[in-house]
Image 1 (cartoon, rainbow, N blue to C red):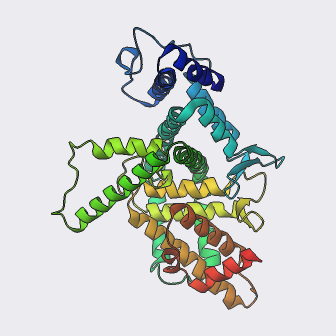
Image 2 (cartoon, one colour):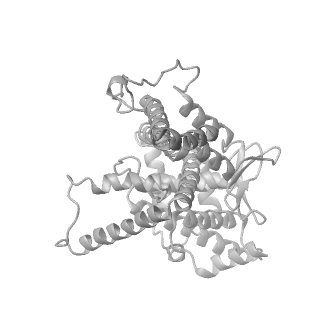
Image 3 (cartoon, helix red, strand yellow):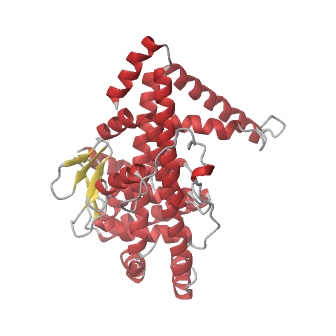
Length: 416
């Protein structure tokens, strides 16, 4: 591909045509068409060939028969990346931005892969992969909602269990007298509920981490190839956000109307330049679900025993090969799930985790045997540390539920 580009650049001066522009327009048309056709499998209303803005009767783009679950090369590329970085077989180390195989401990994918995709497919190719991952993520989130609404919230027994559990925890600002008995009891009752949710949360977290890497590569290439465009987009984005914030503080100030395409069109520029945070986006519309924050809390503490904090890595990794669960995709998946609901669910979720930590520390101190933080508490604190890191939240949000000295103790042990 790079050789073809250089050929077009070389020959354009001799024949007096815009060779590079022709190349970029045609390659972007081909990739956007294939991406559009691949996304059809996620849409109720399909975009047919004669409706596509990328298809042409003069220079038609050929459509080849599918050989697997994917319609074309765009789908095959995304599904191969998802297969390679499967969180049940690999471990993601955020400091290295690299995936490692759980069995061989060998590197299977790193940032260089995204750089090579940028070189071969270009900005439009990476943007297309990012959009396809969005469609896949929406489907997984919709599956999650379907499973929880049909399998959990319509079952009277589950609702009664959550109700009695919530009564045992109230008030959330208080302490549980016997946490070593209360929490395991309800974790055991709900154990058979978790397998489908674990798979869906890990898939969402995996796709979000990939989207994060794609945005990083797009942003780097934009700043490197066109620093003036990157600066203009960044400054315009800050100015627009400042105006919107000013409007919410004072409704008399101007705000873009619904008919104004500014925000919609500008958002596409920001995504192509990688000036976005996939972890803060809302992908689906949801309604209020009863006990959702309690459900998420019980789900998290039921899975954390499969993970352990590793000082050399600075994050959570799987404890046993028989329980394939990777820490970063799990944390990011839970964060993305909470982002789809009202922020009060996140606040309640953090409050419940804070109560768990305080109660376990108090219980361990009361027994007189503990000289350091219990392993259950260390794992939860590690989860919270990663949670606020990926969410971009201030540490004060955690300290409003957990005393600062407990978090400081955890941090000092991590640095030893």
